[in-house]
Image (cartoon, rainbow, N blue to C red):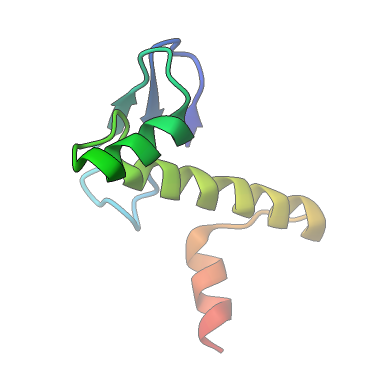
Length: 86
């Protein structure tokens, strides 16, 4: 789950299948566009404000939400990965 309650950063709580320890990941954005920060980080070889994995996992969460809406049923990452294997 990605929460939007923090005004200064991103907080991601992965499913147990992704992180059995349940550790949350966090990232900060100091009033800078995430895309611009990422491009600048690539150009200058520095670490972006928010870890790339948070963006990746946030995109997965959005895609799973859309898939769940279209199917009108609960969808988990595990169920999608299992279906993709067949």
